[in-house]
Length: 425
Image (cartoon, rainbow, N blue to C red):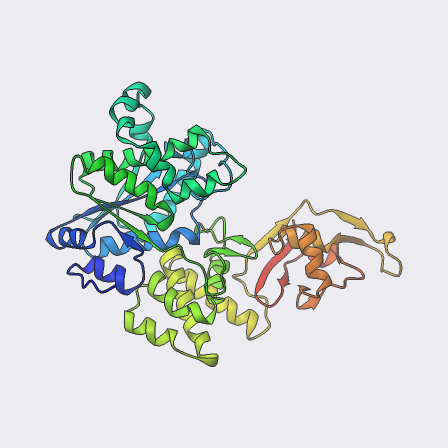
């Protein structure tokens, strides 16, 4: 990009790699230079926590506020009842109002760590689109809003075309999602003077719809971030253990820290720019390190990201535990802990030549400790000598753990990088 921005926010977006597309670079930059701009990102309440895949856009809202503008976190209490079909292979499961409200409460815990909702000037706003969507009169909505949308154009969006090409059809309920999201932008513009909607590049079609509708009232803008994959092609935010949640009750700060510590060498510099607030020059310096020196940069990345999400104490504790586990061979007090009570116990008689006592199926223990997704996954781990109890591999010929050994916490390891402390409750 050759455009040289005037505003601090656009400069950060371009220099640190947040920007994929914008409806009007120069117009938005001028608006940002003249005064406070209010911008929003919408989040449907499909789970009790946000995950690492959301973190890029949360950082965009944080930078927006740090450069003097007003962010809105829009909770999709209304749109979640429909479900965003963008680039999905099938329809989302429909959630009830109680589950949606519970999910919103869980998600709100994350935003308070990144945004200031209490500052005197341009405080962040936490809103819920159920406020205006739940009370819509369907016939009035079709007459006043629906008439502005071209079905032909909506069918041309890549997010819709990709679904129409699949066996799973696109329901009329889902098709309405684009209109409802466009209406969100109109309402936010009317109520709060919101001029900018941001989101991932998969939201480009939805953002364009909202702009086309709202531009009948005011000049507004859309901006998207790239959809990130790691240098080895994996979707950002996924790991062998599943989604990397941002809420501590769904993923321990240690596991969160370890996710960033395990970043591929080629991604370190890019992730430092996107997920931390370190100066650009320092990000580039750390990302250019080679050999064993890159490991120091990964620790800095893990500490910086974990400090933003869980606090400095959690980051320090995670680093100390990692050193204890990896460098000294210890157990590590900050490892995730699991008190298990529903693990099946098997009588020792089923296996010859074992001392008397009760034994637990090792595969069940590793699944219970979230070190394996399933019994099949755990058995594969055991067969490859990757399942360890206090650093000793579980024998494939006898894949059991003696119950007496689990009366206090023992360290389970899945390979060299994933660990947990487990005992029988």
